[in-house]
Length: 306
Image (cartoon, rainbow, N blue to C red; front, side):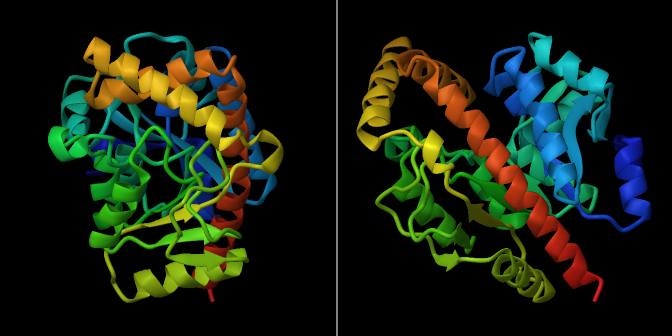
């Protein structure tokens, strides 16, 4: 296994000194935002993690290795390259074997983080059950990964292009706790709330860290969703974003776009329909999640060292 994992110098030193580490995905760079905002955002998010006492570890597949922590040059390369594979659980072995570049999704980042013994991961939003999944069976691998991989995911809930009700039902079935940070309702990525309640509300980082420690001390396999609403000033109105999403969904259906191609298409279309406001919102919520994620990583490290 060690043959496949390569730590950056910063991550290696953090490991040696017992510092808290926060995993970050690379799909957000290669598939989630346009260049150059993607690279700029990635660097800023890494710096936010550092500023709050933790070490960032952006994860990607390069030259047959799982890279835990990317150099500045690697970040730049991922940001302005085309044709980088979107890597989920099923893709990892093939991409490693064929030495292709792969940008890790939520599921793949969780797997790689756990292999590197990193238990806190910051992203924008998790995948979930797609609308119409009762006939298409289109369900993100992120949900299954949350059920079996011991990594907590700090996110702004699930993207509102999904069926949030079925997503919550799936997580409940799999025993994955959804903890709202200072919220009773599941955030829906661009909006601060949805109609769906979270399982538990935590008003402090300490509540989250002690909950995660108790879960893993009891050997209860699987992760947790830490749902952190988008900052108020960047949140979009539910009616406005719903109209944009409905329009994007109709176009995706007409063009026969589904599976792993659906999310990038829908997010791109929503950006177009919102005059770029959705991209500003996306950047703001990821940065906000990085602050909370770093604090959770610091708190959990302190608890585990007691």
